Every structure is written in structure tokens, then in C-alpha cells.
Amino acid sequence: MKRRKSITAGEALFQIINYLIFGLFTLICVLPFYYLFINTISDNSLVSKGMILWLPKGIHFENYKNVLEIKGLGHSALVSLGRTVFGTILNVVGTSFLGYALCKEELWHRKFWYKFVVITMYFNAGIIPWFINMKNLGLTNNYLAYIIPGIVSPFSMILFKTYVESLPASLEESAQLDGAGYLVTFTKIVFPLCKPIVATIAVFSAVGQWNSFTDTLFLMSDSEYYTLQFMLYQYLNEANALANTMRSALSSGIAVDPSLLITPTAVKMTVSLIVVFPILFVYPFFQKYFVGGIMIGAVKG
Amino acid sequence: MKRFTELYRQRGFRLFLMILPLLLLIFIFSYLPLYGWIYAFFDYKPGRDLLDCEFVGFGNFKRMVMDKYALEELINVMKNTFGMSFLGILTSPLPMIFAIFLGEIGNMPFRKCVQTLTTIPNFISWVLVYSVAYAMFSVNDGFVNRLLMNWGIIDEGINFLASGDHVWLTMWAWATWKSLGWSAIMYIACMASIDGEQYEAAKVDGASRMQRIWYVTIPGLLPTYFVLLLLSIANLINNGMEQYFVFQNAMNKSSIEVLDLYVYNQGMAGINYSYATAVSMLKSVVSITLLFFANKMSKLIRGESVF
Image 1 (spheres, each protein chain N blue to C red):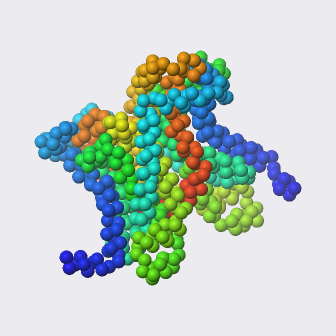
Image 2: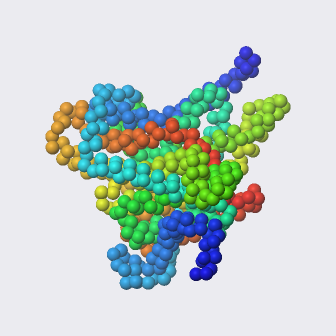
Image 3: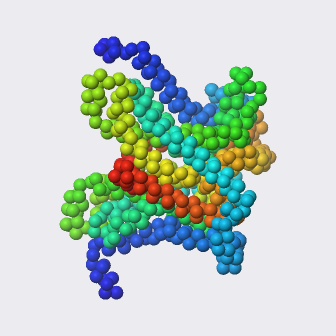
């Protein structure tokens, strides 16, 4: 009762406008994904007439089935999935151990090596020298180019190091008195205690791997190494090539019903949805880890 | 050898040997490319051995200022680079404002919902942003054109994406759409750490909402804002290329080409390796200078370095 009394007209107006603005911005953030989704599951002939604006009509899931039959798309999904899984595992192992080692006062020339790692966040030689280097290393048209350069990420290393420094030192000391070496202390004691930050850097790495586009653009000319992101980019740009792929797929002759017949637009939208789906799906579960990560990052600058 | 065994007796050195492979990786992928800078001093043709190519000294650097055509191009590229960076810096308080006004929303579920949903765009790739842009704004199938036509506001679709007008603004808008909610999270976290007693005291003194925001919240957030502002000044010429690469087309090329994209277009697409390397070499030097400048400013003003 007391609170209600204190609300003036100006206050009410402020609240309404505030809610409206945030509601509108949130809608702008979500609507595109909703629009893509209803168009992928609607009657394709209605979609190409532009009849699907707010609600899906003639719901079917043929697009998803047909898209996976496009030559190369399933393979590129595997390429993307593989780099996400292996890249993330190696990144977590490498980065966390480096972060742990760089916490240790006794590490030989610790300060120097810390700077050695962190400087790379702010300085690079430029993309052409980077490309020439990768080429000389034999990492063009090579799957390892997706995995190996990502093993150590300086930003995640800082996150991990900051987290380990916040743990009580006594935990490790007792293990070391028992004669355990660094590797044992790390795997048996430190790593299990760091689950929240491990989850954070794992999610950062996985999202980065899944979304990565430019490394394919620079390094891979063989379509065997194309990722989903790269395929999507090609579909978006090469409407003609896409139409041809569709035609050849159709001449092998199955679908005739125009409402199920897949169109270039439907392919673009469906592939987009397939690309975004893992992120939309895991995001709510991992949001707290992201937020935890950015807060540690904020403290460190 | 004796020295090595002596070193090896130290635990710290043995630990160093354990991380040596990881440090080597960093060396190989971040430091080793620096040798590629020598390509800037040659007239390199792909497929040939570097030593067979003509040594041109500073020829590629001279070309940037002496060649009228190259200079014109470069000036236009710098205009785009600074134009878009300044738009970003001009609107850099937006995430802070977002956080402050979100804090004024009393309904917790609504607030949480806004916070979660507005951060999603940050986690999708630029390719996907382009796909979203395509779905929403394309001439034939775009949501916006359909809607406007359905409402009878326009008769014919507007080609938003291929237009060369207002490119800086649309690029800014997409970048903001993608990152606003996420950037605000840092300020939201910061606000949570402001001492609640200060608000109580302000309330007792009869401070209005705006006064509380102005005298308590904003001063509490300014240090964070300042660090981020310095970092964005340090990144003035590092716009990245992915966003501009996916959105570029023949119509908007002259106003979308930022420095990073220019280097790509010259070097990778145009196979003009040496010239592109010279440009990106200058870029690296300028950006590291800006970084030191930003760090100095931070030390002067806050008595603390950025990193």
C-alpha cells in the first residue's frame, strides 16, 4: 500500500516507457529468429509468395530432411562438429594447464612468459603474414589448421589463472607435501575445483569454433574442409549455384508437391536455422558461465 | 650441460619444460608470422620463391603516398575506418545506459528475460547476422518489405542491402544489435557491486531517481566505462573484417571498405601480397602506438594501467 501511494503520474509514465523500450529491443533481438523458423516449417509455396509473416501455415519438416540431402552439407556439418568438439577439448586442456603454471611463483621467468602470452591478444603481424606462415607450415587445406592454433587462447588463460589464484593455497600445499608433482596436483586437485571456469572457457571456445568463418575463407580451397558457416555464406551469395544444386537434386526426382518443394530461399533459411540452433539451444543453460566469465574478465580488464 | 642439470634441479624450471610445448605454439602462430613482414619489401608474385622476386625496398610504402590512385583509395578507406570507429565511440555509453535503465525495471522475470534474450545475437556469427539481414530486409522475401507492402506504405520492395547509402549507419546498427545486450552485462555486474548504503543515504536525503542515477550509479560505473573507452580508442583502426566482408557488395563497396577489409581485398582477393603486407604492417605499428598511448592515458588519469 505504502509503495502504491508514492507512484506519481511522471513515475508511471517513466515506467511504461522504460518497459516499452526494453520490450521493443528484446523483440528486435528475437523476431528474426522466429521469422526464420516459421518460414522453414511452412508451406514453401506460401513462403515464396511472402505470406508467412507472423504465424506458420501448412506446417511440415521436409525442408530439414531435404537440406541434409544436399551434396556436401552433411559433410560440412561433421567438419563443424568435429572442430568444435576436438578444438574445445584441446583448448580447455592446454589453456587451463598454461594458466595454472603461470600462477606459480617459482616458474622459471614467470613474468616474462606471462607477458609473452598476453601481448599476443593486442598485437599481430597482420593477415597476409599470418596466411603465408600458415601456408609454409602446411596448414592450408589441412584439418589441423582448425584445431592446433586454437589450443592456447590468452584471454581464457587469464580467466583460468585469475580463478586459480582465488583458490586457497593450502589445498595444494598439502598435496605437495605428500610428494605429488605438478601434473598430479593439477589433474587431481586444481582442475576438479575449477569446474565453473572450465565450463566458461569451454563454452567460449565451442562458440568460437562453431562460428568461425574467416579461417576457412583464408586457408581452405578444398570443399572437403568447408564448415557449415562457410557453406551458408556461399548459399547466401550464390543464388544461381544454389538453384543448380537444387535442380540436380530434384532431377533425381522425388518431391513434386509444390508446397514441399524446396526453394533457394528455403535452403538459406533452413541452413541458417541449423547453424543457429545449437547456440540457441545451449545458451540458456550456459548463460551463467558466460556471465561469470565476463565478470572475471572485467576485473582483469 | 652442467648448467642445464643445475637448472633442472629447480622445480620452477621443470614446470617451465612442461609448458614449453604450449609456449612454442604461441610462438609459432603469433610471433613467427612477423617474418612475413619482409614480403613488404619485395615485389612478391605468388608461386615464386621470395628470393627470385624483385627487392623494391620501401617501394610499396612509397606507393601508398606517391601513386595518386592508391592514395585516393587509401584515403577513402581511412575515412570509412575512422567514420565507423567514431560512430562506435560516440555511442559507447549506450551499454551503460542500457544497464542503468534495466536496473530501474522492478519486475524480475521481465528483467531476466530481457537480459537473456538481448545477449543471444552476440553469440551468432557475422555470416548468420548477414543471413538474418537477408531474411529481414531482402527485396523479394524480406520481412520488412513484405510488411510495408502489406500495409500499403510502399508498392515496390526497397533494396536495403544493396544500397550504398547510409552504410556506416547500417553497419553501426548491426554491430549494436549484436553486442548491446552483451556489453551491458559487464555494467550490470558492476552495478551489483555498488554499495547499497549509498542508495539508502541518497534516498534519506530525498534524492530523486535521476539524482540517484547521476550521483551514485554513474560515478560507480565510470571507471569501467573509462577502461573500455580506452580499449576502443586503442582499437580505432582494428574494425575487424568479418562483418564488412559478409555485408560488402558492388553497390556499397566504396563506403564499407575498412582497413582490415582493404588489406584482404588487396592481398587475398587481388593477390597483391606485398602491397597488402606493407599496409597491414603500417596498421600494426599504428595500432600498437595507439595502445601504448591509451595505456599512458590510463596511467595518467587513473594511476593504473589498462592491462
